[in-house]
Structure formats: C-alpha cells, structure tokens
Length: 83
Image (cartoon, rainbow, N blue to C red):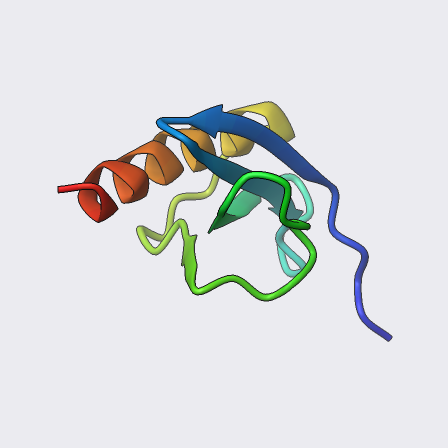
C-alpha cells in the first residue's frame, strides 16, 4: 500500500516547489524530504520531470526542519534550471 505524502507548495521564480517530509522507517524520530518542481497548477502528487531528495544523508530532527531544507534544495534546483 502506497504511503500518502503530505505536500507543501511554494511559488518560486514562476515554478512551483513541492516538498514532503518523510519519517525514517528505521529511526522514527528522524526526518528526510522529497522535492518536486512543477509548472504552476500541476499536482504535486503526479510524476514530475524534476525531483530531488535530501541525498546528503541528512537526518532532520523535526518535520519542519526537513520541510525547510527541502524548500532550500528546491529553490536551488529552480535556480539551476533557469541558468
């Protein structure tokens, strides 16, 4: 059964940055994140051409810290895309 992700969305430079915090299955007190970049109005739950994960083995102590880190990574991804 697929886990329903709770996506948060912010607009950045004409794109939408979607971030979902994910609780680690092996260490429930630690969090990670997934990022999706879409055109405005697209659903965060649908597949996106541009996605990212923390990738830094970052274990965040709270959902909010994971979300904040996800948005920072998402903004960097948009900046790279728009170069």
